[in-house]
Image (cartoon, rainbow, N blue to C red; front, side):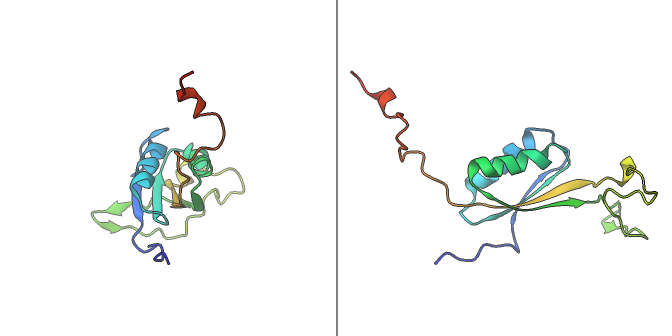
Length: 134
């Protein structure tokens, strides 16, 4: 039986500040080197990752467990400054659209790696024919 996946110490990919396609490339590198059933947390500030990472997970056969919006919490030195009122993503408190400063600081993705199909196990698509001599 496989050991339980380690959700306590997941692999972290900090792609904040990186633009498309770099967050997905960093995730792919981490997943390639990770054992099956590993947990990977991706932190990304590029809005395109909201679509790119779920698409990558579907194409590669990994499980996207969670997407969360995380507000950027300012710090003083090493101590986080706790806001007086809770931050509600997408809410301006005025009933209108959210102000730019109230948008989430970044997105947090939780991905679980799943077993991958072997690329050498033919699928009957004719890939073997291309290397035959006639």
